[in-house]
Amino acid sequence: MNSSKSDVNSNFFLQPDEIVHPDATEAAINRGLDYLSQHQYPNGEFCCYISPDDPMQGPCTVDSTVFITSVIGSCLLPLSKTTAAEPILSRVTDYLRYQMVGGGVWNFFSTVHPMRRILPYDGDSLSFASNFLLERGVQIPERNNKQLLLDNRARNGLFYTWFVLHPKLHTNRTLWRLSLRGLRTPVAYFLFMIRNAGHIDLGVNASVLSYLGDIPEVAPVINEVIRVIASNEEDDCDEWYRNPFAIYYLISRAYNRGVKKLQPVVSPIIERILATASADGQLGKSIFYTALGVTTLINFGCKSKELHQAISFLIKHQGKHGEWPRWLFFYINPTIAYGWGSEELTTAFCVEAIARYKLDCSHTN
Image 1 (cartoon, rainbow, N blue to C red):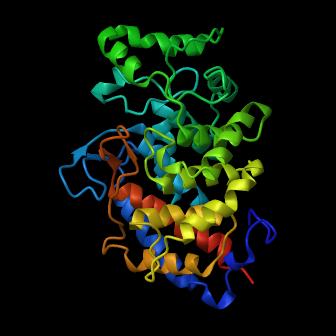
Image 2 (tube, helix red, strand yellow):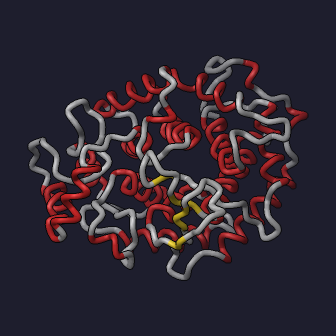
């Protein structure tokens, strides 16, 4: 557990007779892993789609992204060393090692994507991939890419999303190299800079916080997270993560990884998630939201009756092949519901939620 009873309202804590039976969780996890194993590409990548609607029922286009695969791999880390998950994780590990470029950075898109030449590298992709590979025991240029992040901050101490030219002097050669690579496609780079260069996104900052940990340099990020949640601004604090449950999830990852100075946001986020609970156990407006909500509650040490109901809801709605339905995770911009997701991604989040529940909550007394 990552929180004591004094951390949150005692009403959030479960009763032992409400726990979902371990056999049910184990079966759901194994079916989900079997689905992911069957749907992982030979090179380790997972399928991702772009779609114009949240449930992704309209036109969907396959998109080759490194980021989605790193997120799926991260979701499965609690199951490391298990017979079913280890082969999947090994293929993700090899894939991310191959996709890494000098200095320890990753592009959102894969090496086969035509947009990779245009899109700058970003802190979100770096943070997810770095955390995953380090958890897997893989050596990366950790010191170098952490310094890269620290040199890519605004004057207020928050992290820029993109490694592009900013009005700030620095001597980081890797950052200069990444910033200037866009000059190979100057028109596209100029257009991107106009729209995106100064982006500072809370979800991305939370991902960076998960990677860097509680060091003095991240104090502005912690303060901004606390301010945003206190001001109820999580619906509009990030250009890409437009789903508040995604923001909650990313914040809770940092908290679970040791950034306990985020404690002031724990109770408000728990209360807001539980306030969305339906009678059938759903949290928020979809199965995808429910999975994010469950893991967030567990990361914050919450073990309420709604948590059990949510797990039962997820198990009940698992598809016949072990999958859960696709839903958009993040978006292209804040004004158009157009973004990325897949059955594989939702399934990974659901497997993570159920696995964390089984590991963290099934032995509560």
